[in-house]
Length: 319
Image (cartoon, rainbow, N blue to C red; front, top):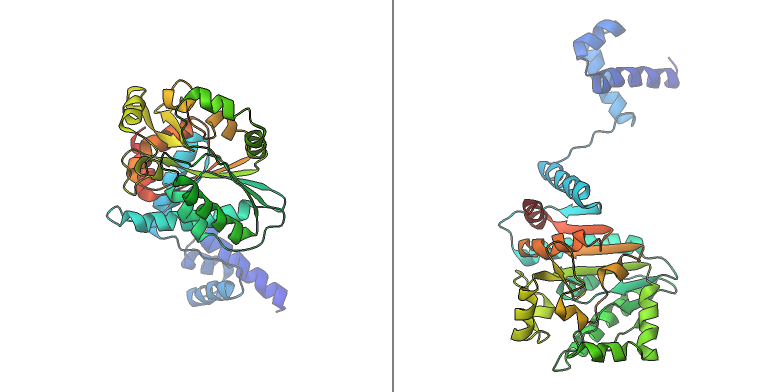
């Protein structure tokens, strides 16, 4: 028997067994061979590469179902990172940013523009990405970072310098406050040519990466813990029904944001502007981030989502 004929015979037996669910005894009767011969044929079919058997652990099925449910509900491409509910939140965050770093690496292309919204999660992400030169890549800051003590500029400079080093990229900082004292001040700054140039670069972004902030996240969100918001600001946000932020733009549970008073003073990229960026990677870890995450998804800010299993479960539990 020629090799080709032998392979055809092995393939026939394998298809009957794996595709059609036939027993070895049934296959042996039809092929007029012994059961032990059928067993050897199936073994040889695997050895010849005619059969590829993939084992999926229970956790893969579990997180796959979570991802499918979130995709159906919110229309985004989802990666759920498995992890036990009793695990350490910082370990879960590390796993999420590791997966997100690989996905972001696939999104970056020469000559593109990456919009970065600073924060605890994104800072961790930029520490996890694979260093490689991306010719012509520009990195632009999506939200101002200066706070009342001025220390925010140092923080974001360090974060963006890490991005520049990783990808040999050109960085465009946005040297304005995260939140102005008065809406009129922001309006005046937005008329400045230097600020307009950064806003134009933001509008040219091909990829955006950001997270969501929660008032009481397990791993504290930077904007809520580093002198960006006063007690009066927090009272105003709660009175307006805000549940958290995306790119330091505050959102209600239903995804609305326009008439939240703090947003008139903020410098973050609003959901309607974010939605114009072709690829938008949202990263979230922590069950307490589920409310702002749902709000962000309802606002349509993301095309891709990476989150851990605990956060995915909490998100779906909100309905």
